Length: 314
Image: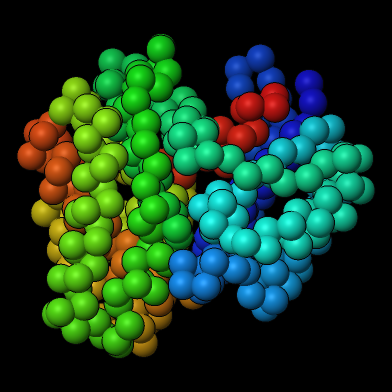
């Protein structure tokens, strides 16, 4: 038995999973998420801001101390959409080498491709599901990109594509007003439709029987659809959201002001300004999956790329 540490550094958040490896899979020791908005402005400027790097440094320093205290034997940190796009990413890598070194000597973050991101998300998401519910289509809606993955529990991934549309990127491109204007919303829908079409062109989602949605936008939508007063991961994990409820929640969030969103009990403060963009992407995913696969509900998993990263080094 060993103890592994996984760090997922995305456009919006940085997350940590420490887990014990067993013959039956992973057992959680510690999970944590912080919104650091590393990708703030990257879509427009192509560079990390100094403020974003410092927010990420502070979170990763704390994560490294937690991993040292837990006696982590192996660590893997992956960086995704924003880091793929940033011209000054060497500053980011130097920082991760410095902070991960005390955990396991020589460790540094790695930038993974969109396809690898998709495969890790799928591995983390479907491990607990009955294979009879497959094929599965897993969608990982992040800050800068969305992964669409098709596969089964027995044979793994059969098709995957990552596209450059996520809640932060779409908000920065199209949803400037508070609340967004109808023209902004239509522009955002067009961006989402066009970007996701490139994924659906190569991922035959018509074969899917079950949609599994992962990451913070999806889990927050599930919490709101369930009418929860506060965010409860145990109630959300593997919960089912019918499309009527999903559409109602998404449309409501898109039309809300940031102040109104911030008053919602399950809403993380770091998602208040971008979940409208995430809702636009979710609606387009639901539309296509219903039209092409006849799917009418989304199953939500709290397990995602973070679990896939841990499994890859266990």
